[in-house]
Length: 367
Image 1 (spheres, rainbow, N blue to C red):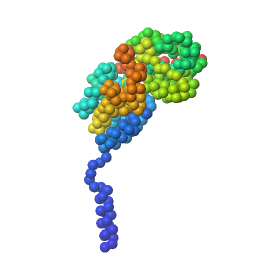
Image 2 (cartoon, rainbow, N blue to C red):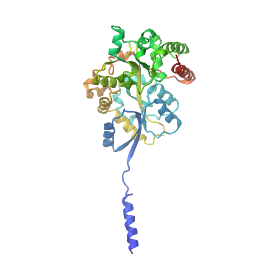
Image 3 (cartoon, one colour):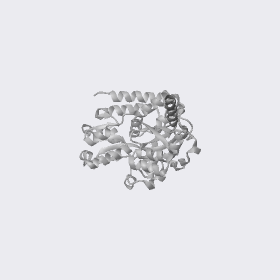
């Protein structure tokens, strides 16, 4: 009898753990390091009841390898538009968006939708979200001592041998990926970066080998720290990271300046996309729609200094950010920005292969 009572008690207790009810829902998100504040994750979870399982990456190649190799298990990813998303769309990595499930698409600025058509012609697979420029950040006090009243608003700061040779002993760096460097080199040669020709690559190679002795390193993740420590005085850099470095510099008495070169600059865009086979596709669309809300986009900008494509968010953004002329350029400067056109097809792949070969040779060059 006692055993029967114990058995029945165990059955009752077990049933308590298996009472039918609503199961926890998830969305698996992979984003750049530091680009999704915990406060936004918490708000999404509270409003929707969907738990965010969050992963990070710090390099487009790392994310691309995961997406191309197998089913990543991600529901929403944030890769860079060009050249990565173009190649990934060509490879069939992404599922078409169900736009009727993303009504907040209406808030995306038309300028960025037009730019995205260069990568995703039908705007079917990716939503442009965070954007910025690739420019030059330098220690204003250090360079003014060398160049005095010279106009420091040109790509020549790095790609003119006569200029860069005068400051190379103070520390000059370039970004580590060819997709970031070559468009700026092309502009220094008065070439259109969108015209991807072998002759252009040859000229770029010659220019890069000339300045190579004056380049201390090729990096991205350590650039801010090296500028703040004084190990570098000038670097090719991204606008959002530059803004953070400028703020940090003010705290220690260093005066940095970021320029969008007068010759023009590369516009970069990070997108939201849903991989084929996403295990929680319905929740993925809810997450994308949530991130496109103007108040959420503004919260992202205020906490990370990232600029989003949601122009309506600006009414919620801190004035100190809005007054930054390089985070929020004038319409005239915006017109000068170019999204680097992706290399598609056999000719495009051949171009990219040659560019990577040249870039490896430049980086490995010893003098």
